[in-house]
Length: 394
Image 1: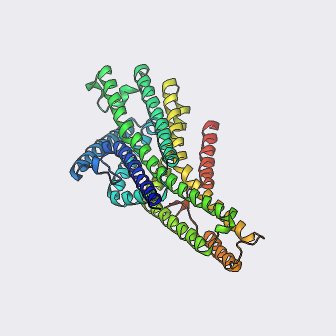
Image 2: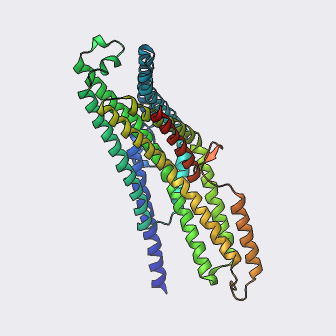
Image 3: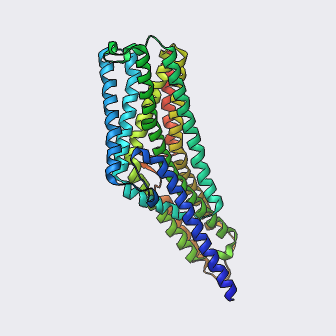
């Protein structure tokens, strides 16, 4: 007996150690992704750096982006060409989105850190779950980095092959010869891609990862409900109450995600959809191949970011729909649930649980306007497709 107890305690200790190591690795990954942007969105003592350093990084990079945005605006007003507006205004909007995002995330660092840790605690620590989470992060990172590297390649091609556009991109073009102008624009593009596009991509991935973890928690709860339905001897009022309490807690965490990210999600969606439409127009209005390839791949890149934003958030709706189905199956079952158990009490408990599921409008809310779901994504996609048809028919 003593040997069995010792073995059980060793298993618990090993599981706890595995959980701590796994969480530390994830924290280290996010720390490496966000440190250059002056953010620390989680508790990671090994990679902690003081507030003044974060403030300097944020102020310096965003101040430079403010100056770049001012340059784009001056160029647009000075040249007074619609083509310049279509090219430069999306850059100004992207800079504005990144500045707004970094200040909101920096202000809510402590709350987001606590929410992040609460979400990780929901998932049973196993090699399979950790593999799923890491596979998701690394696969999205690979695609994001691939898109941005391709965009950088197209920028280089544009700088090499284009002669008619870039002399007009400086406020006082005579101060730069052609070579120095191209070198300056290359470094400006690299800075823009890293601190605007990649930063916004990482921020969307961070939000999507939180939704992914919560979706996995709902998936695990659905699995336990299904097991309780199949193995009816395990279904009791106490277990149903535990299921309902876990559902309420998960819904509470979903509300926190909405509260912390909904202002950002609203601006992300509005800004990205507008930029996608402008990039599509640029593909049509530019005759040079390097320009058309850049704008086309930039549009594909932004579409992918919107998909990342919607994918796991819409999975939450799917998991809740499955949960409603499982509870309904338990309610309409004709078999005797458990011998010597009050079947009527279990039926009433299931009815209360089902009413709770139907009454709650659970999902990632976007500032209370709508929820991230497959339906809202299709509505936005139809809007963009309508714009594409109008552009290419005009």
